[in-house]
Each structure stands twice: as structure tokens, then as C-alpha cells.
Image (cartoon, rainbow, N blue to C red):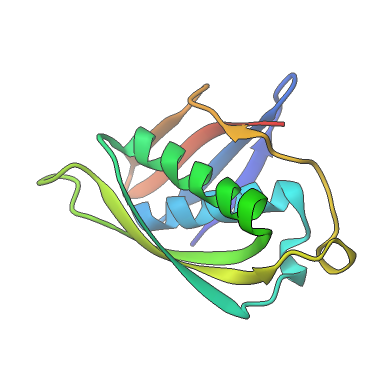
Length: 142
């Protein structure tokens, strides 16, 4: 089960994601990030984009993932509805992900326009597993 929420932060958006799987954390990060910017329930799954990302650790992987999502929104005007993410075996190799990102071309008259996210940050970032459940905290710069 995937759950995300927005926590209090003085100037930016502080996100908390919980999931039964590590991949779910990254799926929730996509949903939460786009939930700040637009009405994700209005985004149809008309197109699927592929993504492959490699990193040195899980925190860098999350940073690079959200950064990639912001890039496809800003550069390609692609609104994300959801993502399906598979994470490599992090015990044997540096972490990597492969993902399908579902959505369509952004149309403010359909998807709305909320707050613009400028960047992903490392501020307050944590990723951990507790009692079999994964959790992540991160801050989006608005």
C-alpha cells in the first residue's frame, strides 16, 4: 500500500512517502511531486516513457529520479499520472531503477496549475525500512 503526505515546512514542500516496497517509495515520490504541481487525477495514461537511472546510493537515486521527473515536465511538458518502478538488488550492486512513466502532454486547462516545483533537494532526505515497511522523506524546492 502506498501512502504519501505533505508535512509542515517553512518555505518548501516536505514530503513523506510510505510503501510496502522500495519501488513503491519511488512511485509515491512521483505521485507526490506531481500532486504539488497539478491535478494528477485529471492526467490520462495516454503515453508511457521509459527511464533508467543509476546512482551511488538510495538517496542519490531518489534525487536523480525526482530530478528526471521535473525535467520531463519542464522540457517536454509531460504530465505524470503514475509510474511503475523496479529497483535493482541494492545489497549486491549500487542502486539503479528502471521505470515506466505514464501520462500525457500537459494542458493547464485540463490538469490545472498549482505550485511550481523548481528542484529536488537533499534537505532532510531519509530513506529507511522499518518493520518491513519503507519510508522516505524529502524536500521539494518551490
